[in-house]
Image (cartoon, rainbow, N blue to C red; front, top):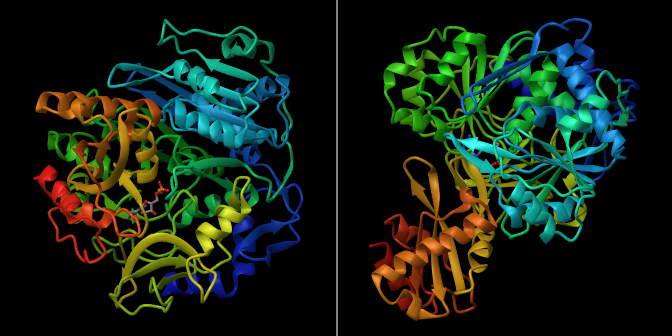
Length: 630
Ligand code: PRX
């Protein structure tokens, strides 16, 4: 572990020289004067005085060396299409898209909201936005109208880019009607909606004047060259919303220079890939993993990025491995849930294709259980690396870093802190550092390394309070995850300290789901908890108090009502937040001061001891929960 240890130590104790070296991995139009300005803690500004552009680093700088190499290969098992774009072709597409955005009056600092399925145009739109110094906010296509409206109102985009529809397992998922509904709900609607019409939804309606068809706009700008807008290193590149403990999602704001450097460094160091090699990330562009490792990381590195629209089991469970063989993928990034889905399928597919090019499979977003890790590692014959990070950080906090040193891996552990992260486990009450194998809150001593969030969009105060306000003794960044570290220095993640749950690798706030349920007119009060699930890691389960009890008077009525509540969540938040069960009760277990006893509810749902109940106001409420889950 010598090389790893030396690298990590120098990244903390000699951060300036460490990051100066990493910063040479990207192109700067104006060199930076100061590596990090941490004069206003906890705010950190990286590469002060430097000017660069994210799109330039992702595309333009590769034109001289790899113009004809595939930059982006898009495969859709939904529409049975494959499209390949060389770096030169990607540059042309992005220039055209940037020209369209400019023609709509979009410029530096303007927000562009992207609400799209996994299509190449989503990547063009992201790159075109940062090319002209505008700021994108990609909203996951699985979010419904009210969630989208909340994000519109927070980011206040001047333009939205949407597709007519997505497709899942052959079923068309219209997006345009949700866009229209969200815009009608929003206080700050965008002026224009640019539509990428895939001709999947023949019933799509458009609003003349506001809605514009990209296919009609693009030919007017074909061949146009749009110069990159050189921006300050700390200029925001994007906003990405994520869930917390309140119902209001937080807009994670990312800079430009620090992010580009962090990703550029991560490709060889963590993902052990060289320019020219193929990288396959199975996430969605609507999540942080998609931003960093479908789009920016691989392209900045000069890789070929593989973008896949479809399920891992269609047309058959061999599809991923077929792509690995076909494109000679060297590193792959996915989630434990996706692997658990494959585990239920015919395992002969794991060895049907030649996957010998694949060096590592990175799994992230949720706890990786040992059986799943073992199964895929042995089945495909690939080393699995557990990656732990957050939307806030944009790149791994804990991971083995085989590009630095191929350290031994321990099952169930995402290994060690990545260079740049000064990780500390603190006792939740005293703030004291915990000893080996003792549980503590995983914290990062600031400054956060390059690439991590700069602030919460439009709310510096919330940024400081939320992330740096947990401990009195020290201003540290809190991940809100419990963790332990063993005597050898390996970390183990033990779950969240807050009310955030993780459903199939998707991060959701229980409060967000509760608010969605409360949109149903018959719901007086509701509690949502995350319950352990063999496939998805966790699923939301709701306990609701209804206003009109006659609507849940018989088992048949209950079943109807439960479906209705679930449909409300689909409509308000999106199907990803739909509770697995909605139980109707007449009271919720609370403390005498009125706080919901979520941990106790969760424990009963998982057949565990509910713990200390001395503060409970009405024990019969807990009995109702017990009976409901029984
Ligand atoms: O609780 C941790 C869990 O997912 C949270 C972050 O989710 P998100 O913002 O969606 O970012 C995902 C980026 C990969 C964390 O606070 N989590 C993430 N990775 C792991 C994990 N839990 C256990 N093991 C992991 N490898």
